[in-house]
Amino acid sequence: MLEIKHLYKRYGRFLALNDMNLHVEQGELFGFVGSNGAGKTTTMRICVGLLEATSGEVYIGGQDVLQSRKAMSERIGYVPDFFGVYNSFSALEYLEFFASAYGIYGDEAKNLCLDLLKLVKLSDKANADVNGLSRGMKQRMCLARALVHNPDILFLDEPASGLDPKARFELKEILKNLSSMGKTIVISSHILPELAEMCTSVGIIDRGHMVLKGTIDEIHRAAALSSPLLITVAEEGVDDTFAFLQEIPNVHKVTAQGNRLSVVYDGNREDETALLKQMVNRDLPVYSFNRQEGSLESLFMQIVGKNKKPSGKGGQR
Image (cartoon, rainbow, N blue to C red; front, side):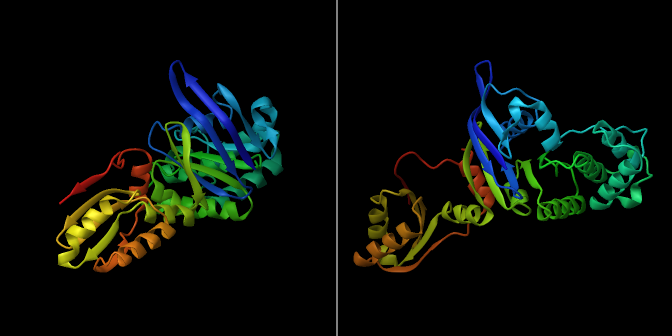
């Protein structure tokens, strides 16, 4: 459904997007995560026509939308991180106003807008003044607004920002429902665990470049593999084990507390199995060997470079 190819955005000497590539399937609920300034909003604004790319291509359903503003307006719905509402309108009038922009009027518009208010769980607020709605309600109403023309894909920039837990849960359920109806949805956030709760897949962007993309299961596995190995050995084997681990290519740092060693190790599951076999063959007295439970937060911090592994071998006793 969405294909971004070699997208660049330059502001003078600053490169906001650096060869951004992304593929999102039809019906996917994709989470776009990165720290502030990583390039999430820039990418979205280019995709929806609010910014001009320095170079690159964006396809929606095989159509190059950067070359066709008409296709862009018809196929894309957008909810920005900061949205304005017309306070003199009721919720229904607000949606009917935007329906008219797409040539939908009269009973057709009213019925459509009432259906959209029902979809976003605001039926009881149809005649309420927009100004009196909570932030969470306004967010849902803006989502309904983005659906007025039945777009193929929705872009939501930081949709849960500033919402309380109840409003966040309601938004999450609505987005899952839309995804089950076949809508393709792209959501941005700087909080990886938040996206993992609602998305089918996630991509992590850093310095304008996609550095990791996968299903939620794959992201969780990556989080597990980003955590240190915890190895417990007999007291008399600590020195030999410490020295042995220091020579393993995928080991970047070893620390020891008593007979328990923590190992920064970037091998995969097969590498771990081979390492354990080597330790047994060397007659090292291993009591236990396992990964520390991984967290999405630590994975994110490592990827965006705020918790980089040491560049060379390291040890601590």
